[in-house]
Image 1 (tube, rainbow, N blue to C red):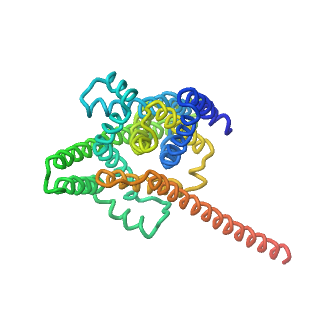
Image 2 (cartoon, helix red, strand yellow):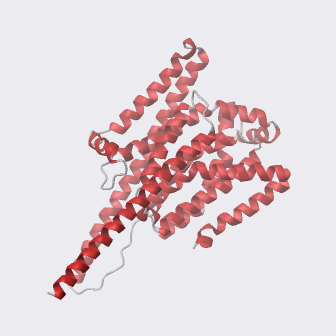
Image 3 (cartoon, rainbow, N blue to C red):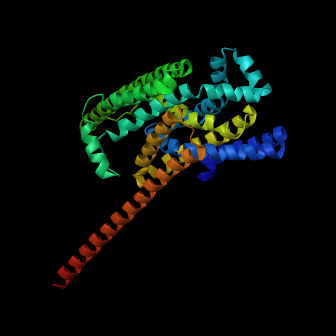
Length: 382
């Protein structure tokens, strides 16, 4: 099971590390290894959230996620995306941007760093909306009940998530606008942050809205097919296999790709703290992205989210923390190690809470079985 799920990841790791040695020697090997670990640690919460969405999709779309989705994640976000950032920021062509990345790595890093406020605002708002929509939803299973119960009541207010997100975005941009007595540079930066944040919010609403719309259509179709099956059984007619439309799965796939893109922002930016070499960066982040994808599928196939019910909660709290960190990094620098540790700590806490819950339930069931056995013995003795 492990080899089947992680086989491609192992293969990509071997090829990537060999390529790193051939390209940059043993120093390149070390850089790629470090970047791979960085990407996995920063994106573990991404795998948990992705698994919660992917388990609703059939085997075909899971394969699409592992094939076409990997190409988008590895080559699109980890290789093409940094080049596109430089091309847009420097107002140069993509070929010139690639040449700059290979020939003048320091200038390339500087251009990507200049684009960080726009990236952080877009990704931060997208992830913030995911977090807010999660905590404002009333769920049967609650992890931090003292916090989630009152938030679920507040969630009954329409458009509350969007309002809070816009308020946070306005505060962020106004803070930048008033900094240094409204200097021209900071005023431009504030405008960039505001526009990028609104773009992130719109992207979430469009992609998430379409995904939700087609998911509801899919559920309605399943209910209709189920009713027809029951009628056919009642009349003694043969039951045909249910055929579900692919629109819902397609938009879920699209939502997953945008979600993965938002998660990868911090990894791409953080990679520049380790190396300015775009080749080594692509190799390291690409290997990490492969493991995140494989881990997502593994969680789905093992039913881990069903067994450890608080994992999804912990992942969404990690998303909220990452959104806050991205928005804070627009003005202040936060080390990537802190970003990774926050996510790992929250997921680890939720996992341990799930284990304790499972033990408590098992103990309660054991006591109930013992009580039933005792009653039976008493009755038989009588």
